[in-house]
Length: 100
Image (cartoon, helix red, strand yellow):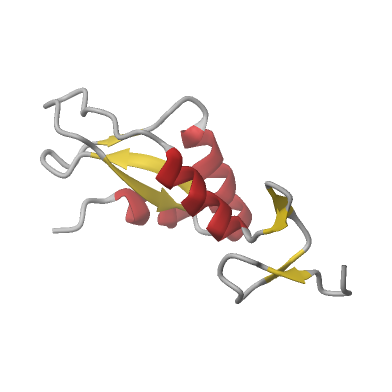
């Protein structure tokens, strides 16, 4: 591994010092892979298939019909920690507000 890490084999744009499934992979690519692998879930509010979105490297579910955001166990804490770590306290609210 080089001084600045290996180049992400998936996007080829970032240098990282970590692996995912045995390959040098940046956090962004790893999160996108995990999102693609998750099954679509029905919205608890209206039953519509929810869409996967990534907010601060956390995969969340958003209903395209009602705009509801649903989090799995622990995801709210992950978003809060990431926002605090990045100094983005308002990013939590901005990133999860529905786009009209």
